[in-house]
Image 1 (cartoon, one colour):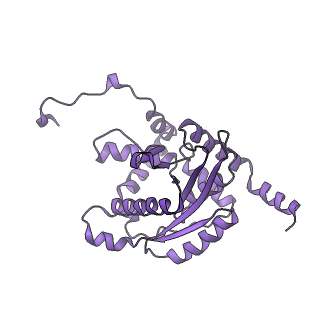
Image 2 (cartoon, rainbow, N blue to C red; image 1 turned 135 degrees about the horizontal axis):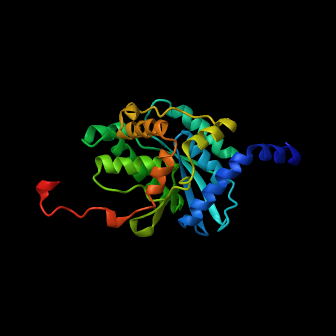
Image 3 (cartoon, rainbow, N blue to C red; image 1 turned 90 degrees about the vertical axis):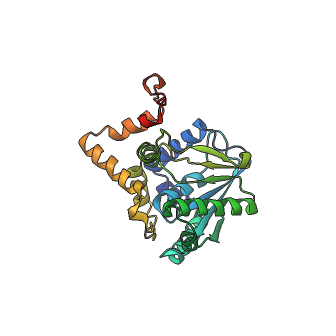
Length: 261
C-alpha cells in the first residue's frame, strides 16, 4: 500500500469524534500524572469495546506531556467461552496498530473452586495478579485499564450501597511501593461515546463469556443509574461531579455507640 493510501486510511480513522476522545484521554493523563517519560505501558485487552478503543487512543500517542513511552497489549486467557476467537482477533488488532501483543493463561474456574469469595472479585484479583507477574517479565511498569466515566460512577454507588464508604477507583494507583502503576486514562469518556466510536471504526466486540456477568451488583447499579437518568437527564453529570465536590462539613462523624449503626 502506498504512502498516500496509508495517510488517507489514517485520516478516516482519526475523525473528529476520535480526536475528541484522544483529547479527553490526554487531559486525564495530565490531570493525574499518569504517564512519565520512559514508561512501558501494558494495556489489558479483554475483547470488550473499552479496552480495544483505549489501545487505539494510546497507540496514537501525541500526548502533550510526553510521547516517550513504550506500549504493549496483553490478553489474559481465563478459560471462558470464546477465548480462542478473542485471542486471534486481538492479536491481529494490536498488530494493526503497531503494538506488540502478549497472551497468558490464567484458568479462573480452578480459583472459583478453591475460594468462597464472590466470582467477580476472584476473577478481577487473579487476572490482575497475572498481569503484574507478566508485566515484570517484559519490563512494563504501568498497566492501563479501559475503565470509563460510567465505571467510576458505578463504583461510587457500589461502595455507598454495599461498602459503607464514599469512594471510587483511583485514576492513577501505585502498587508494590510504586513498582507498578495502574492507570485509567478514559476517566473523562462516557460509555456511549465509546460505543459510537467502536461502531464507526468497525472494531469487533466480543461477549464476556463469563456465566456470572449478568448476576453482579455492578450490573444492578448500572441499571439503577440508567433508570434514574430517564427521570432526569442530568443524573449522570451530577453523580460524576459529586466525586470532586465533597463538603465534609455536611457529613457525619461515627456514632459514639455501635448500636446506632
